[in-house]
Image (cartoon, rainbow, N blue to C red; front, side):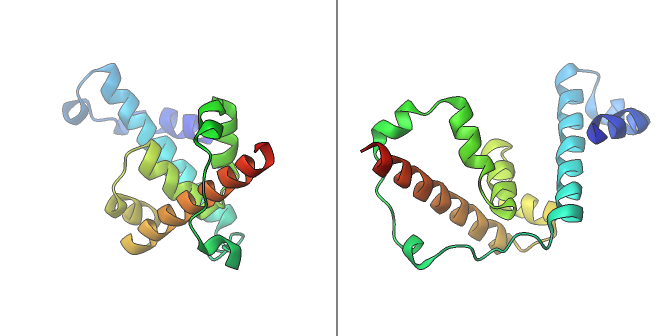
Length: 140
């Protein structure tokens, strides 16, 4: 809701000479507003709540994943897995994998080092692998 309010309040900042008068350009601009709004919300409410180092000793190996499990996952299950990630991992994962931001862009957006962005993406992927691995063991 806040994102929509920001778009409506700041619609005058949408510079048609820079962005053109196309639906795609407006969608890109509004997407940027929403992403920045989500980042600001996360910084405000979750900055101290999530520990970056949540991996246990058991998570230090590369887990085996049953490919059949991946094939059977539906959209909602995939979203649930991603949403179960710690906030810092989830933020970088979504910005990089889903939204296509580079690590440098993510670092600038979040006010972190580029290396931290890369590390959080690696840890997010590892965490997802562990979740899939445990799901595989339950079904296998």
